[in-house]
Image (cartoon, rainbow, N blue to C red; front, side, top):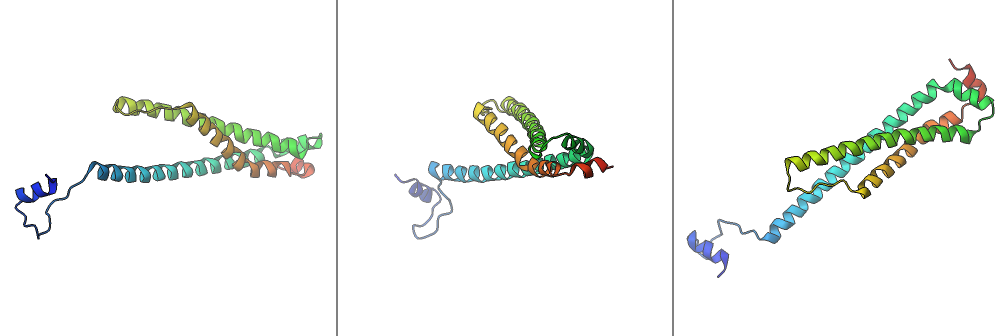
Length: 167
């Protein structure tokens, strides 16, 4: 017995008329759910990308302010023999440390969020996996390096005499 035929009889629909109902199979629901999940994944990925961009710009601004405030220190270090690579390495290290601290704070907040979701919806499996932690720290390092290159190279390129004269 076909479900559509039973519904047509109960709704008293002539076989030539259009159905006033719609049948959805489990496959239809699964397909719709997969589409919604895909859209949500893209949306959350876009939010994560924008967050990384904003965080990276924040790191770059902080490092540029640090370079400006420490111009005389950079000049003194270069005057006593620090090379381009020494200054570059120092500021890149500072940018990476800053981004790792931000990444670890984000991991902590994500862990607390996962606990909150689990408490609100116990049947929903939320887990912070070691792979996601490693990936988050890795992205933090990459963001720190990428957005720290400009301030670090700007600091390393300062001429010692000009830097010592800086007020």
